[in-house]
Image 1 (tube, rainbow, N blue to C red):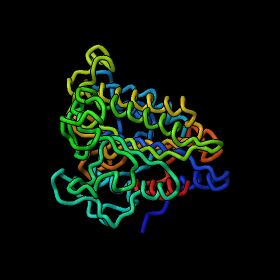
Image 2 (cartoon, one colour; image 1 turned 135 degrees about the horizontal axis):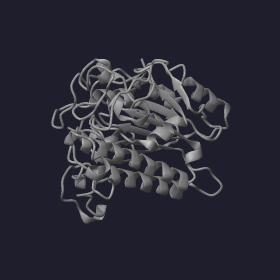
Image 3 (spheres, helix red, strand yellow; image 1 turned 90 degrees about the vertical axis):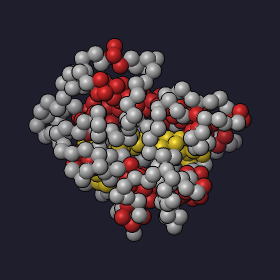
Image 4 (cartoon, rainbow, N blue to C red; image 1 turned 45 degrees about the vertical axis):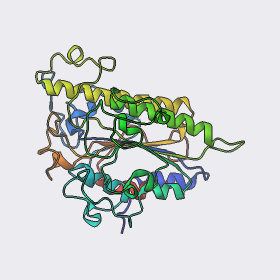
Amino acid sequence: HHTMASPFLLGIAAAAAAAPPRRPHVLFILADDFGWNDVGYHQNNVSSANPKGYPTTNAAAGIMPTPIIDSLASEGVKLENYYVQPLCSPTRSALLTGRYPQHTGIGPDVIVINWPYGVPARETLLPERMKEAGYKTHMIGKWHLGACDERYLPTYRGFDSFLGYLSGAQSYYASAGDRNGTGANILPTCVGDSADHLYSSTFFASEASQIVRNHQKHTNGEGTDPAPLFLYLAMQNVHNPYEPPPDTIVNVNKTFPEIVDMERRIYAGMVKALDLAVGDVVSVFKEEGLWEDTVLIFSTDNGGIGAGNNYPLRGIKETLWEGGIRGVGFVRGTDSDIAPLPKGQTSDILMHVTDWYPTILGL
């Protein structure tokens, strides 16, 4: 059985039910290994983990500027009692099946790329249900839900298109195989220019922009509203390896000279690249006229580890302490009347990543 939708989020579904039969676009951005104390609005601020607003970091330890993410969060509802699984594959399976990973056999470990299993074929994934509801469905980024057989791949599980990588991690500059998910550097010329040496946050944001522009062009028939769009953007940032973005995005030594630990300094640049990519994608939604009818959901897949920071929560990714499983997350409703949400709100209602499945399908 699927989990119940969060009572708080049923408000969105109720708003949708009362509206005309238009459906909102859904942009779901999943950050990777994003620490509780690595989003601007949690740093040195009141949060559910820091009710008195004590300092949680300083310049030497790393102030993470995420003005775009902060701004979007302030235009919606910050989920301050929101839980995920402690690792990549289990959280991703919970999100896309609406079921705890214990029921799907995903976990407690992640899926290694050559292991002979994936999310069971009996599970109906969220994009399959979205397609039934008339959505165009696209996925960009990290899959990590099985790749031993093509029937486990995103385009067999409900996505119209997929660009990204199938494993748990790779170089941020090794996206050449991402166009067809092979991970190979040699691609036929028909799939376009090689993406090798492009930083993944730029590459993924650029693909998202192309999808949004093409969506408007190809689905806006004579006198009809375009089909609703479901875009699942599973960013690589800020999972290791810790590789600085190119200076054209952010020069980590010039921008964060006061951060003492070099790995943490690079990590700050990776957070900045994530923030800028989110901004680029939102900008295209606005340019193409989709933003007014878009529900934006932002989540991490688990707590931070390595150069990441979850203070004042105890523990890291891979643990069941709060630092591993209490996630950074927020939801921003539509600006139109399809699925609005109050702005500038914080919710302490308990929510788990499985709740997104029935909540999104209820829109």
